[in-house]
Image (cartoon, rainbow, N blue to C red; front, side):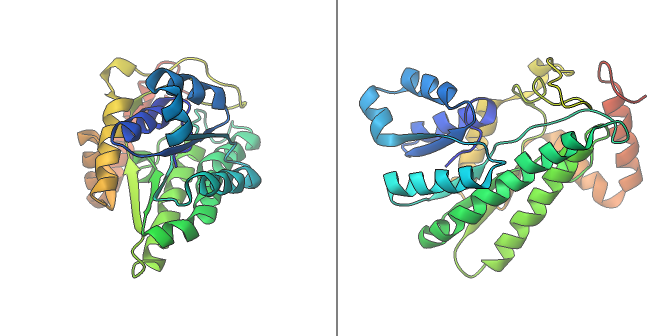
Length: 265
């Protein structure tokens, strides 16, 4: 199961898993986008046999429950759930509308919570994998992205707790932190008023591709890794933050302030 599978890392991971021979249950609000690329990648009979596409808004508990139930009805089991669906934001905390902050938590944190809650009984039966796509922002908060950082930190805390609670039951829990990845997440990120910012403030050509991220996440699932920090900058940020937190905050401020139209200087 892969949420947020209409584009970006979710789409790349769906295609990566199909290439490795897995059946996939895919969800997104824009479910038609999933259907389009599956029809391009597979023969019609393969799509019918190996794929399930369910229109899902992960911020809605009933949608997440329905997705799990439809997956069990079609395939009879769940071997892995990848909580990938998420949105970003950019704006000073003091200037953001509360609805923006709430929306980030509803999609990123509660979406992960709902899907994991309804899938966990099935994952325990198969001793499967529960995966959360977090971010380096879950380790080191990013200025101008308060709710995004908070939601990713909350995801990590949730999954670590689930791991500890089920450590003797064979459940595999992995937290993946891609770092900056070339995708559309920044283009559709919400501004302080809740509107999509419309264009990315960063040079996407210098980032890791979604396909590379998907390949590494799939490898991590197969090798049952506990955590993945996928970029050298991310690993350095986490390491330095443990011992020199003020330095990390200063560097984070300076780094993010260089963005075009940065909300702070």
